[in-house]
Length: 222
Length: 149
Image (cartoon, rainbow over all chains, first blue to last red; front, side):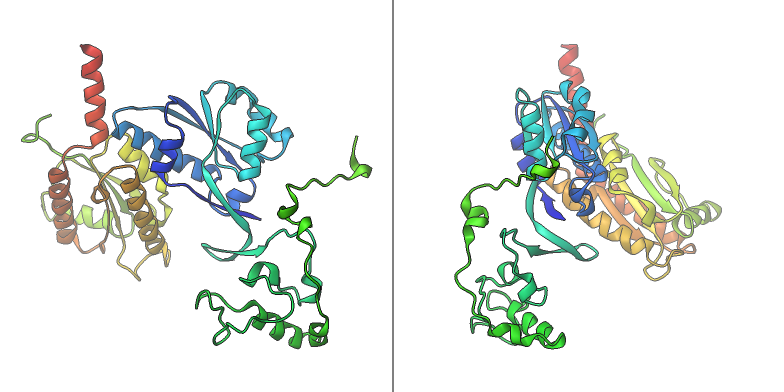
């Protein structure tokens, strides 16, 4: 799932400056699960913005709406009537959601209320960790399901760097060494021989380095 | 409202199993506490959402007091511990909004601690008196005055 976190209230105030009638638009998918932009967070952020603006003596009208998915036109259309009523939209969707809304309403200012952080999982309650860098050419099959591209700070593909200390990455004592995890995991599943394979330099053009990506499935196009 | 006559309106969310009972006991013991305190009974402080605190402030409460069971004594095991975390997060959010975090406070009170509850209420009222009325009310008054001009 996409993991994001909210911007601070002063940051948000700065973003919506000049608008008197705002719609805070939540998204019911990933950002709801990561507790950043769902119905509840929309309510909290709206209330906080009303409080902050009243405190400054410049009260603004802030209303709330949460749709099922901001990155899907079918759901964006359900918000069409509501969006028309406001000067601007403060989207609490991920970066994709914000852009989808902005494209759909070319004459309406649409602002991002969240900092979209990464693709990750819920590690434990209130803790999310990054697991996938969306490199476009998955190597997980060779590394026991542990991604060296994402979880090794140097994205090493041919073994550890030598900077790890007591199974921890040199960048932080809280960060486990991905290569330590990979070695343990491959040993446990009896596939340690896979480490003998030498990886050539990775083709990063399939990643964001090659520009923003498009996938076309002709069999599904209308 | 001038500062001399300012009697803060405090919204107190009291847990049914402890603080609400202690407020009841305070009544039976004839313990006086400031009349500006409005008590709302809640099944557990863990039931309270961040929105409740924010909306109380937004709608003009000068202070919000959350009174839950003693730590380890929650009827629902850990509701009051969750409430404490939410209150801490909301205090930080209020600071971001420019509202003094001391307007929101959580205390732990058992059903027998009527005296402590009254003390806590007095402390809260004193703190809020020093902070002055809810600034959102002031800005509203200023706006009204500007409109009347």
